[in-house]
Length: 267
Image (cartoon, rainbow, N blue to C red; front, side, top):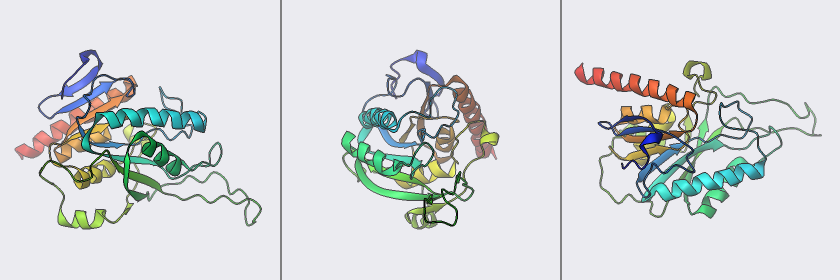
């Protein structure tokens, strides 16, 4: 993985093929075009989460423009058979009802991404109800699905060109190709980030949609969960985040995961 601007590299472990880039993903020059096998990410949802360095309550139009920009960049960086697992909200009611999943999928197609499937993430501990609208009345009820989705997209070719080594087990393959995944979310307090996702999510995506030693990218690294999963699942990983504090959290988690993996090998 070629580094085009070393000043942007916040952390790197060349032996394991890991890199944290502190930069704006849309503008960063630090990742080569056509170099990424799989992108696993969860961008901001535009629901007024209090991030350190990102405004999460812009207009829906501005949010979709931002989405188009980063999806365009991601498309350029992906290999011809590159894939994208995009974790987003199904819809939202905060600040007005919006069909987030449908709108983002249409933007992705406009950019050039091709649609493969959608995985429903039934997050067991999710709780987002803020209002009934109208309680026990047909006048104005709100219907809110307590799930998120993972859109599976690809660049030009769905079938992988290289014959790599798969690391998925038989029962995992059978279970995960059923497009309803049930596992809990992650604790904000435990991780120290306002919107972390659980390691189960990138783990499943990596094992199902990539080979051992493939290059995995997370354009919105946050607390570093995707790269921690790369260590555990023997993938190379690139994570990008603009916020210094989040890069520090990710760096700390990576160092701990690397030490743990080394101890596991010794034992």
